[in-house]
Amino acid sequence: MNVQEKDVWQILEKVTDPEVPVLTILDLGIVREVKITEQSCDVTITPTYTGCPAMNVIAMQIRMELMAEGFQNVNIKEVLSPAWTTAWMSEAGKRKLKAYGIAPPQEGTIDKSALFSEAKPVQCPHCESQNTKMTSQFGSTACKAMYGCLDCLEPFDYFKCH
Image 1: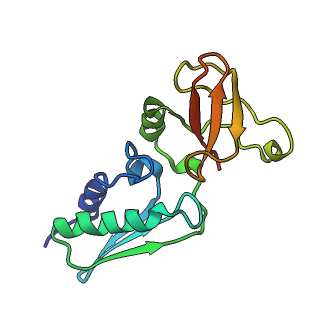
Image 2: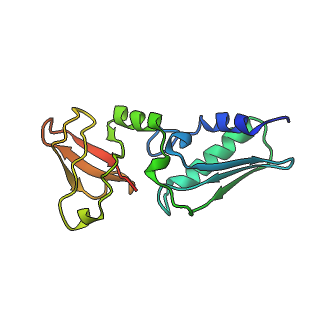
């Protein structure tokens, strides 16, 4: 099998996040490295959060896609350092989040004081209003917070910056 690293990256474009299926793992930026040797295909991934329950499913999806393309020995390695950051997300991924109804991470909203004071407003993905309010530090998954728009009155998840 004569495969190059770029071919593996193209295959990985098919693997989606089980929690936000409009995003690929490349959109999320969780694939850190791809290495092809004579014996195996090694893929290194970093979770968006330590202990993210989706990582087992993602690793299985990676393995299944690569095996379907003829790879016999697929190794998935999870690394925690350096820690994943929303800066690793692609711009296309952020646009996909917004179209899906989830506010993408916005620069300048990383604010640890939000635990003790009012959270910074996040643009509503539905009407684009800044007149929003955090209703819960945690949304449908640990990587999201729950917000409500005070103009269109729609609730929405916000993909937290970190």
